[in-house]
Image (cartoon, rainbow, N blue to C red):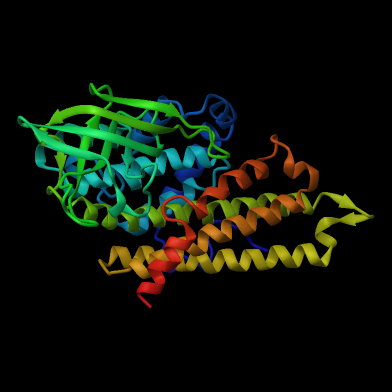
Length: 388
């Protein structure tokens, strides 16, 4: 089985520039991430100097305007980056980066005023300003229409009150993009707006750092807003149109999470192939057992099929097509696939697969959330069903 990074699944979309980007990311992972990620897991966050190095390499502004330091590349290039990054065995590192590049800062790029972009975007691209996005609340996640956090005007300022939950980068971010209800009388999805909140703003605090099963080097927080007052100009985009901004960026977010799932599948399969070809039991290697090698072959086939669909979805986004149905299918498919692949890979590692010292154990823990975060599988399937 050939588990090289280039395959027929994506070759039709890949350029020489994409290959160079993929190699650049692989070198960075090998030098900066894989030797050090264990320490980051222990401390619970990725050091900011590592993120600044990535910013200096131009990896945080791939799709952003050149005038602010970006490269103005398309969604396919962004996917190449996300997938290459996701070959890391440290999912917490991967999501720290992808929340910054694909889930939080795009809100600023899509809706920011000239003043907002000039103030924040160059630092975001350089990795000097790390971002987080606050949508989920204790009682609302994918159901954005159910948000309860309030924002009200008070003398030329906004006062924010409420809480956000499960916020990636929430403990150590510098800039937060926060969704809050600005029209309490509006029904459902109407009346939600987006705001920019800087770290250290009075009335805003990290309620607590959250302990998770996986993604251990990703800092995750509950955020609390208690009469947090921000300038009127910190409204991001049109008032009461925040729901549509969230829905628009969900496609970017879900493709990034699919890239995490596929990248982790590829890494886990490669690790497992190496292991079963050397591990002996009952007088032969595990790879000599027909059941094992055929199971791995089927998992590779499923991974390659999902990968091909993923690149097609990114192509649809690059073409400006409406692809909510396809991306929802992709998110549901890859989230479940990552769990299937990692469960089998851990199983084939035997007792070693249950030890914290093995990458496959970490990948298995990290994979679990991919069927939950960014839109649970069940929510995604409902999005598909509504459009079928």
